[in-house]
Length: 287
Image 1: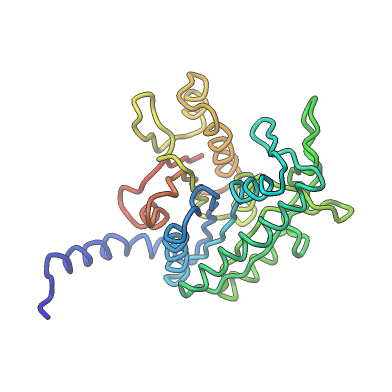
Image 2: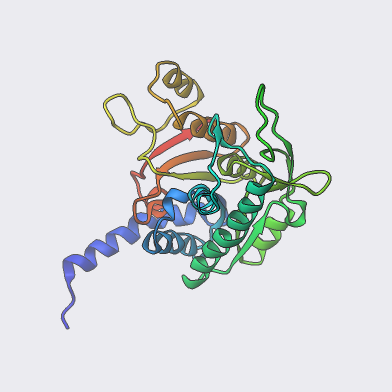
């Protein structure tokens, strides 16, 4: 069968473009926050898993932090329990916390691990309770009781570092542990940003269901710093659910992470497109 020369040249061009980025990020930790909206079907999960497995294969150290909001909500609905949110945070009573641990730390975590292993990775699933990795306390919000929603007190990265050195891919469900052993539901974006800072990561990538930060004409903004971000929030360009996500990204880069990226997780191979191409996708935020 004769070679399809134009297609082969296109593939060679892609690989050539990726090579300097592979060299640059080899040996570096890259934290990827994987959200429920980017895991809606098997094809999306497989695409993500191939990206992460390839990163590990070429010498990077990916660390996956995942959420499970849609899955938790759907299971609560099946139980006849309505989800309640305050300031974007799920009110987490005892019954809801049981579902969070079952879905986030169990079913969803193991589904991501399985997908990575099927693509040739060696993934290990954890929650923040394992090895007392994420210590947390009850999040206090004025005039509201969010139940077992937690804020991070500290992160011990030793278990992740051991896994990285053993050529494993850590997959972390953001469930924290209190001083009395109680479980806390931690925001996955917060956990990813804080973990990236503790690990001195090269990058933290937030997968979302939007192309990134958009200007008022709908074009993607990138190369933003703290001053620009605050100005865009003040004039209403950044609004709604993108505001906390951008602030978590800023917290990460001010904590020592080189860059943070907000990209569209619905795009096939979005992580590789961001990491290994000249133009990248989505919004880059730097200190």
